[in-house]
Length: 322
Image (cartoon, rainbow, N blue to C red; front, side, top):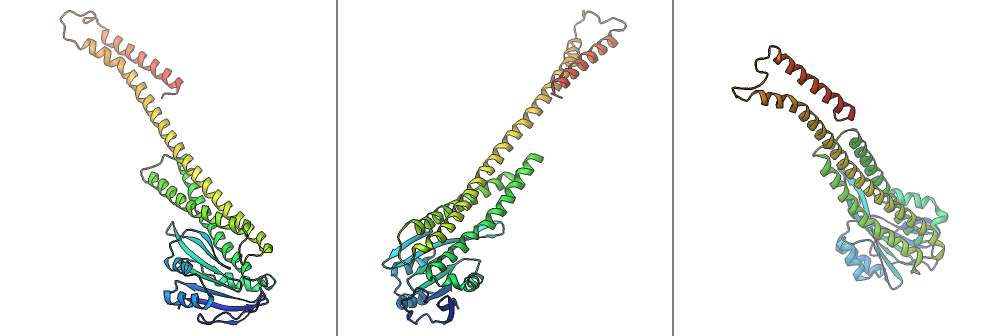
C-alpha cells in the first residue's frame, strides 16, 4: 500500500485518519487540516486525490513522472512544490523526489526514490502541538527542513573522502586508480550542485514571494531552511575547489619528482662521461699514441678518473642533485 499515513489534525493534535476518496471537511480554522503521505503511488490513487482535494492536473502529472527539478508552482489558491532528496548508495549519491501539494487545509507529500521515510518527522512535528496549530505551512517547513538537513551527512562523508585524498597526495604520489577516483567524485559534486542550486532558489521564493497557503509568520522558518540550503551549496562548492587543488598539487608534485629524477640522471651521466671519454680516447687503435708505454700510466689514469668522478659527485651532492 502506498499510503504511509493519512491523518486529520485539529488544533495541533491528530484526531483521526482519512481515506483518499474522502473529500476534505475541514473547518475554516488553519489549525484544522489533513496531512497525507504517499510512497510511489499509483496513477489511480493520485487521480482519486485530485478529485477529492481539487489538485491541478498538471501538478498531478508532474508528481507521477517524478523527474522534475526543484520548483514551486502556483495553481489558484494551492501550491505545488517539488524537492529533490539525496542519499548515499555504495559511495554514490542517489537522488529521489518529493512532490508536495499544499492547500489551505491539506498537505500531500508524494515520495519517489527517497531512502528516508517521514515517519520520524511526523512524530517530531506531532510532538510540537503548539507549532502544529499554525497549519500546513509549518508542516511544509518541517518537510523541506527534513530534506535539506539530509544533504549534510552526504557532504560530510564526501568531505572525509576529499581530505583523505589530500593526505594520500601529500604522503605519496597518486597512482593510476586515484585520478579516475578524483574525477568521479568531481562529477558527483557537479551533479549535486545542480540539485542544490534550484533547491536554494525554491526556498528563497518561499521566503520572499507572496504565496498562497504561506503566512507571513512562517517566513522566518523558511528563511532558516534557505540558510541551510545555501550552506550545503557553499560546502559542496568548497569541496569542488579542494578537489581541484588536490589534483593540481598532485600534478605539481609529480612534475617535481620527475625533475628530481631528471637531475639525478643528468648528474650520473656527467660523472660517467669522464671514464667514458678517457676510455674512448685510449680505446682508439692508432699505432702511435702518447703515454702508451708509460710504466704507471694505467694506474695514473684510473686515479685521475676516480678523482674527477669524486669531485663531480661531491659538487652534485652539494647542489642537491644527488
